[in-house]
Image 1 (cartoon, rainbow, N blue to C red):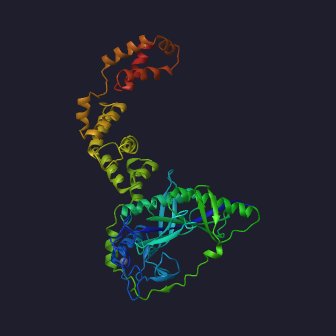
Image 2: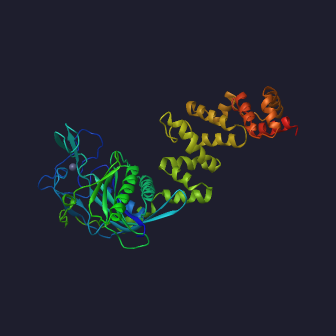
Image 3: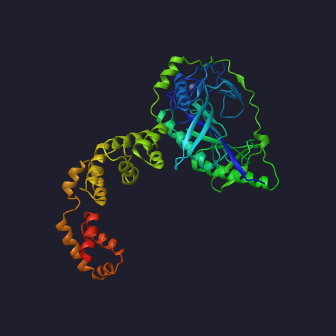
Length: 484
Ligand SMILES: [Zn+2]
């Protein structure tokens, strides 16, 4: 039997960053006391009428435009019927056969520069359900003493993004979702906070013989709130399907649950999950027919998105795909890096922003764009490094000082005497002293053991608190020891 390859599509739910809910005037809230943001509309009292939130439509259109979708001239809402305590109307207002946006494309780029093109089937608007809380006992749905409902979340605007089954590995899914999230952050449409549930992903997973175009039976991996768990869950589910088929069995269409603690996949009983949602057009809402001029304006107003930014930085600045990926993690970080790179060597800027700067700031719980290291100060520091005024250890020390005091790097270097020692006479005297003090190592060097060179450079750095120019020291050790 030929090898079985995975075929994966994903569905992503994103809570939109509007001020109010999808169909009523209640304000969105996180962490407020339960049931303090409710009204007759989102509690489904009889006789109330929903009104579509224009701002939610705008944000959904921006997502669709950023993903290269076609915008439907006229889309409608449907009622998706099911009974559950978190859904007071016993139906969710969603979109069905006429979504707001469809037929787009998003191309993720892996660390090695390989493109991962993913078709976007649709982008549609809907409302979120309320939040169930299971109290007492186990604190979980099974074994709790009682359950309560917090309707603050009920009616929050959601966008659902559905992809074509174009992904072929769990790792590619993780790259795609991470870069899609970056795009949404740049658009400013959501805070995309996975822990708080404002971005959630499901995956549809199947396997098929390599090279085949037919689709196998798929299972749905539900509601993963971390990319790492989703990646592990997909890997486990692909293995389970392969093993099932290898053992002569058949994959059943069902929803499966991944247990991150044990790494196990548990199929949920398929009968229980077989819904008939009885979709019907929502009679209380008018169709969404966005003015073409409005849509054109939104398209023209989109910011430069991380995909474009990464391609530009790789092409124009010579950054690696990995550097570009990390530096477009958030709009704030990208803007910070761009400002540094405008005044310093871009590759050095990328190294220092990703590496030393973030490492030193992490201890203080700060981000690069906060605090004392303005882009101009970091660029000035990199300038002192580039012209040889500072050694790498000296630059790191100066950076720590700038972080702590907000002084200009040149002032720090002068005040602390951090400047690199390049003076030939001073370094020659130092090297002569070290060669005399470590006669055994000096003899090893003379007998051709080049490795000992590093020992002397290390000693010189130690003696000068890292200020000696290592290149000059290395050259002088050879000259003075070998009589060159
Ligand atoms: Zn309300």
